[in-house]
Amino acid sequence: MPQSPGHAPQPIVSRHVAVIGAGAAGIVTARELRREGHSVVVFERGDQVGGLWVYTPNVESDPIGLDPTRTTVHSSLYRSLRTNLPRDSMGFSDYPFVAKDDPDRDPRLFPGHREVMMYLQDFAREFGIDELVRFETEVVRVGFVEEEEKWKIKSKQRHKETDEIFDAVVVCNGHYTQPLVSHVPGINKWPGKQMHSHNYRDPKPFQDQVVVLIGNSSSAFDISRDLAGVAKEVHIAARTVKYETFGKQPAYDNLWLHPMIKNVCEDGSVHFQDGSFVIANIIIHCTGYKYHFPFLETNGFVIVDDNRVGPLYKHIFPPALAPWLSFVGIPFQVITFPMFELQSKWIAGVLSNRITLPSQEEMMEDVKAFYSSLEASGTPKRATHALDDKQVKYNNWLAGQCGCPAYGDWRMEMYYATVKGRLAHLESYRDEWETQHLVLQAYEDFI
Ligand code: FAD
Image (cartoon, rainbow, N blue to C red; front, side, top):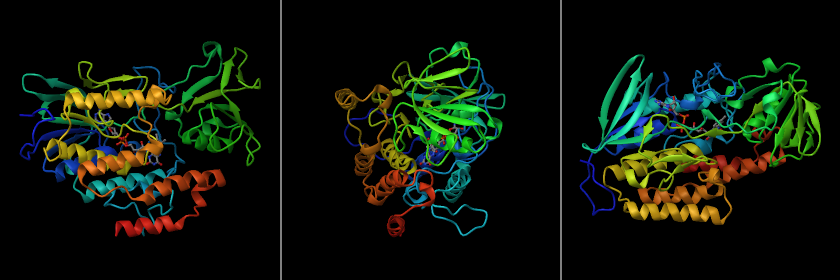
């Protein structure tokens, strides 16, 4: 029977654990749980491993993603997408993401999306994860059964629903599927079309159109360049600039960067905060995503408020339900796969009693102190899980808990070299990598 954390060391035990999702987070979690001796079932509503990296040309029935009854599509990938980090930095610690000597594979340092999917599928095959996954099986409800102190999972395969009992549940359902849309004053009367980048696949339908993109993330950057090849005009409305300056973009004659949209009007015009305006056909919201756990029933112990999932101790355990409920992959602005690996190693060790968690009260105090530190530094609630510069400390803390080697310095050096490379070669940073010594360091580390 599960016991609460914060007690004296317990004997090492094996648990029956459900993992929701077979993306990068779910497959490495399954591996770590099994390595620790737990029995694992992975629920995956898709028909293959890879999650977000399984590209589909299909889009949702509501292009802006606001209709709750719309048909949903999991992946947010567009056809031209290449990684925004060098491949070596993305790989799991003991399964390097190196180029394969195979004409069917993409050897580039910043490969296309298919190569990432194939890497994840290779990983799943190598570690026998496929056999743990129930494909085309959607988790529709996860609830705690008080009397049994266990979790009941209701899943649906085609039309058949099944209830099963587990000691613990690890949520790995990804957070790039539920669109976040910015409010644009006057939008109800604006005659153009709107969509979210979640439903952007390729530029063809935008031939000769005037397109306005909202946001200045990697997606907005890539999609604007994709569109500039076919659209009449492309305008990006950004709150802040990271790598570029406002105005016409040097390498293009039809691409502009503007401050945010002030309002839009019935005559089709889109007005920017600097007083300029354009008459546009379509607005694409490249404004990110919301955390969404439609299946989770926790009696209020976990809520999503302004994109803060909480309370979560170290972005993973809700103190009141720890360690029987946990989340892998909540932080963003991180090098994702190696962080998933450390998070799931920690969860696996805690569930077997090899690693002890603080008491519920201590975890709650830690979360409150974390929230206060965010407030004191003026960090908005919606950025609670943005790690960026804080990721090294976070990963090293997790590694310390797990008793495994600290995070290789070369990974963060690659992360920062990418930022620098982007400043120097905005349009071609993926193909003008100048820090080959970091790749060599990565190889040495793997050996
Ligand atoms: P996902 O890959 O989204 O997997 C979640 C899985 O859960 C899916 O297979 C889904 O079908 C399944 N699922 C969801 N709900 C249920 C349910 N109820 N029942 C059963 N199954 C369910 N990261 C990088 O490191 N490098 C990059 O270059 C990079 N580029 C990106 C580009 C874009 C456009 C986006 C949106 C993200 C990018 N990322 C990148 C971040 C990326 O999200 C992570 O790399 C990673 O793939 C996330 O893995 P995940 O397992 O958390 O989620």
